[in-house]
Image (cartoon, rainbow, N blue to C red; front, side, top):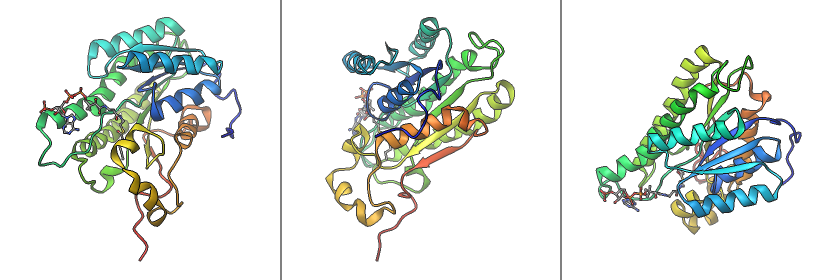
Length: 268
Ligand code: HXC
């Protein structure tokens, strides 16, 4: 789909995207690249990373991949430092890495709960914490330019309650809190804007294929105001807006991109 934005809106900027090798993270990487940014992607799976980097490069995007697990602070630190060494600055950190599986609360072990909290919530905080010195106004590579941007990929399922998703609901609720608190502290102290995006059901993603079997696809019409699943592109366009100067006064918000799904009820 053609972008409604000018091709240079994030020109010269550098993005670090966790989970950038697949799904929504990869589409964000692609669109940031197509609009002028250089892109570093972080992920656990070497092969996924390598093919993602090749795909980005084949589009003419300057891209590099760094293996790492957001649950490990030493990985977070190494990847953030490597990104800075490679590109000389970091303008945006996108936390798109997430873990997920469907399981009833009764059958979920505390360690399973902790695993998703570790990836989504603690991982997001760890990455933000390690990236802070490069994102803050006056930080390395920034000179006197303003602060950078953080974007946390969230969800809508914790606005109400979601079957078999207690771990993810809790984790994403924490992510939204992290977004607001960092927006307050780091927006005030360091001129860093911290926002989130809450995608609804987005087609062709690991999340959807794992969580929402066929029936959601076929029943989407009955439940959704816009009568369709979203595209990864929709999320990436929102990310571009929040990254670009168009979003310069947006701080501490989590933008819902779901076609109105979370607030809808079946027609009767
Ligand atoms: C029950 C499970 C489980 C499952 C793991 N566990 N999978 N419990 N059902 N299907 C439990 C294990 O039993 C174990 O607890 C603990 O979790 C850790 O499991 P490991 O396999 O050791 O963990 P690890 O190898 O680190 O893998 C973690 C993972 C991850 C979360 C399973 O590999 C993963 O999900 N990757 C997929 C990433 C993904 O799909 N991303 C898209 C997210 S979409 P015990 O007690 O046995 O030790 C998204 C959208 C959300 O986030 C919103 C949607 C609307």
